[in-house]
Image (cartoon, rainbow, N blue to C red; front, top):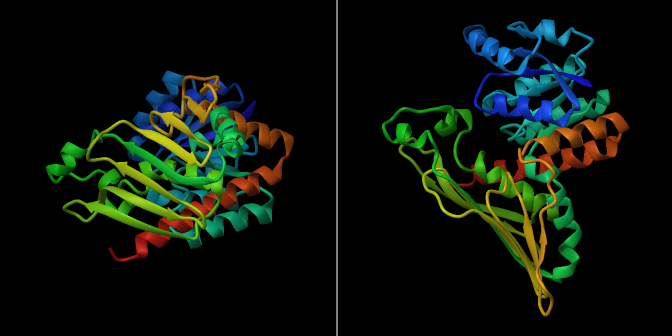
Length: 323
């Protein structure tokens, strides 16, 4: 078992710990929290039978038995905590989005490569058997013409936001908003399949504090265009579609879960793929991270980091453009 320390006590943490334990690859050795959140960490530790709780990062980073650190903190501090962990010689699993700027992302990647440490961005859909099978099926639909992605769900924090109570998810100073949250899954789906686009444009719907509560991202490739829609202020059926001149691939449901897809080729029966082995969307990524680590497959690490950098470049480019 790979010993891992979990940093944070937010909404994602119970899901991440449950997925790590379900993977049967990771042993959660400790949960770190800021001093004011120690009680939350203690309750999580009791719920998941985690041996210890800490409010001292240096204590965690100096513990040679801890091989990985999982960072599930607010977007705006991803870089800071990941850098500290890497500099302390720890392998890192960093929740999406990777960072909030391309320069900080590059710095993390450079540190990891220099120290030959394993650094992963936790984007669930890229590590699922369904995604790998879809990637293998792309050639069957001919030349790709259009890609469409939609991930829209009404945020549990949006009513508070409308009442001028701002959680980090809707705080532009914390890199909140639809682009850095839900749309990250769409963007990773497209980049994971086709690599970096030639150009990108974002058309946000802005709220009262200028955060993008929803928006449409257009990724321009040489031969086709991909549209990535995401909304935290509204809901609709979520889907992923890749259209080619011989057929199309269609997945219904939220892209972070990516439970199945259909391969439709003209003149042939529809083929349905439902290959994920776990109900919880996060289990496969932890299994894949562990297998890459155990096998020493650093080429897989570098490939994943290139995707993270390509996605970060898109996020930064469109954030800087004036709309």
